[in-house]
Picture 1 (cartoon, each protein chain N blue to C red):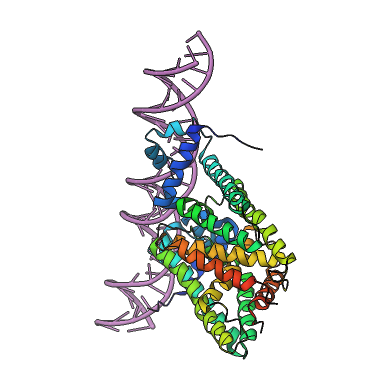
Picture 2: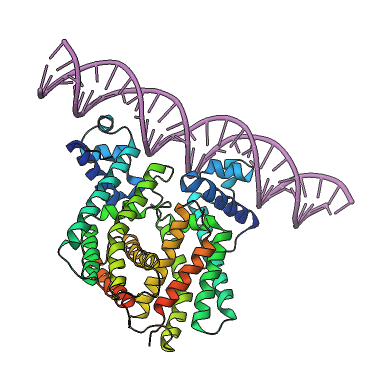
Length: 197
Length: 197
DNA sequence: GCTAAGCATGTAAATGTTCACTTACAAATA
DNA sequence: TATTTGTAAGTGAACATTTACATGCTTAGC
């Protein structure tokens, strides 16, 4: 399952990411990719079978990074609230450093004809959910998060709010301070889902 | 500001919508559009200056419809809860009948190089917010919705949750019953945002 | 330690396809 | 007769991908 990646492949993935931030999905052409890499178009095909594979590799690389960031974020935290805050703060900081990933994940139409790409995009969302779910469950069990609605429904609300925030950031052209507004979002969410008893 | 639309233009818009549901954004080509309309590619240009204008017209038409649906939905309701429920139920029913609009709105990458298209997509979100905002505000003033967080933050949470639901429905290929899961979502949201005092 | 074969990695140029859009013309309508 | 609305056949640009060829590195055999 685990596909190791060569140095050159990683370079190409990073070039693709840079293009995504500056020129968007439609700018991600083999021509631009070659220009960004300072070599010919044909050379790309020495490292990837096709454009689709590049996007898949980019998304899979993202999924791995997100997973690591999440693991790190919650490792030295105890309470569900702390974990919740730390998880989202880490996530937001990561996307702030790598805005091209936001373009990739939130362009749902990104090469939509490809099943593989869509599945990988969904996989990324599942990675985030994998880490968030146990935190919310623990919070509910300790009765610090509300038990009025199910864990799954809480998860949907939290994830949806986060995604909307990212979406707004993206269509604004990354022009507002995502860390500041993200912090507000986290606090609002926490206030809302905290058990009121 | 108001651009009236000819019958033929509406036909083209509807054909474009049909293509969006079946073939996605990348399938929306002048060739497919002509085939769907049973006439030649050139004929399209008798009615629209270009493809971009067709998409803009489609989105503006959607914005108008959404606006109407929303007005209807809340007209015979009194309490903020009733209005809240009715608003989303109407919205969901509308999208269920017109799934191509979901494709259009939630493909943020839809001809992303066009400023006009992106602005129109954002306009649609604002139409929804325009109707939702006063409901939430009224609910907060009557203290049936929580005042622990601001109206704007509540709006973000509600809109984000709704958008995520629609997104999931879309990437599933419209395969689950959006009215059923939508109903659950509305109830969960209401439970959560209701004032707990 | 030299050399030659083999392999990895690059280039330049071309390929065929798809695309949005245009042009020259024709039929119907008013 | 003038306007609207259609057609058939292009047009050039952009695109992903391929092909034929070149260069340099590794390494096995002598």
